[in-house]
Length: 605
Image (cartoon, rainbow, N blue to C red; front, top):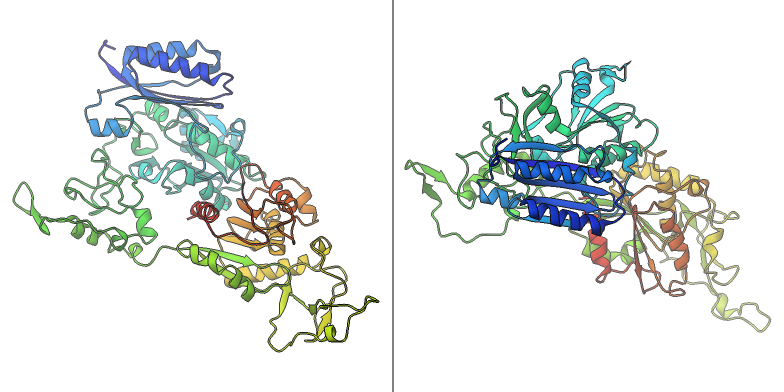
């Protein structure tokens, strides 16, 4: 290489960093002295580096990094390329400056802190480019053991804008493309499509390998049936170096630097223009979706100044021209191009684009099944949560049902005689003709199902700890919920209040066993408490959950704050979000509490 040769260097390393400040100082000094530009991300768990500069400077940087024993075994991917010529692209990719930061995650695995991050030490087995190619070629040889072609699946861990222009394609081998907007959406996709991976030999790949580390570990953390996960070591970049004709990889490899993409010697183009559908795979124009800002492919013929575009994912979720703020534009509807031909305005182009069937209709809301508390019903709970439903109307639809156990009408006498008996006046029950029936998810062991409409005097004064004795009736309530999910589902989540939260938490504990009968993605547990059931004693619960309860002891007369705190502790660290408020037995709907609830729900849209 000549002294002026330019290059790009990519590497990452997952390892425990004992002194982050010292490592930060090293990178600041070394990269600045060598004139390197790009991104350096440091975390307690390792480093992720993408930098560019003179080739000889990059080699000196590698030698300096290798002198640190922390980086033993690191795969340094160094490629020669042209100097960044497009300032706009270089600026977007971070190649006009040097950015060195300490972060919590090397790559953001979850857009919201709902999931316990898997241990990278449990990541899938690394396959070299040659081994990966050999497995694909034979469609069934890993470690010398024959594998049925139907048991082998390819999983692309990259984003939609990357897979548009290139991916692996092998005849008779299923390839799963999650079609995600960002990497932090991948855990939810894996959760929703776990059955496509269970019992299979999963071959994962990404650009350089780092995204497969966390994702493969997450798949393997699901336990039995998810053990056989393999990943392409060095990613697509190492594979194309080994197989310059592309091998089984078709199209171009999207990269996060000024090069934009790297292709093989295969001239075929995989991508297509968002508007006209012609073959196109060049992102250098940096066209983006007006809603989510994801890169989109728009060919030279369809590009116009100040063009407005809507990506496939936003179209699919109903976002179209009607949801774009109006933009004042004095230009005529049609303009002339360089050849004097009419060009459509951005609105005309967009209207043509949005004729897709995906572009009609409002965006889908989350459907949440709501379980009321003890001695309530769906109607009363709907009234109590009217403010919540109103403030969440753009995000969620709340569905209310009555619990299966009907309770007798009881009332507390207003006064007592000196001997402790009720006075005649106080024994007159409330009128029963206008009383709504009350229900429960769990009842006391001596419970007798209501069989008349008469009121009864309570056997004893109100006991705030009565919920501790309501332990029967779970199996009937569980069977009832199965029927609700079958007849009124699907539901994205469950919201439970008080005893309803205890019931919902118990369903969360059985989520894997109930797969196919009660499927949901999250739970909101308000003023909840743990039930004395075996499932809650068998380890932590791995279900995204939001826990809402009062923080001050005594404010909630029904459920103690400590009981709700104990319930939250049963969910895995990082899998639960807690909102504590200063009120009592309610679901707060003022700021900042409603904002936190909305933030939680946004994660699942």
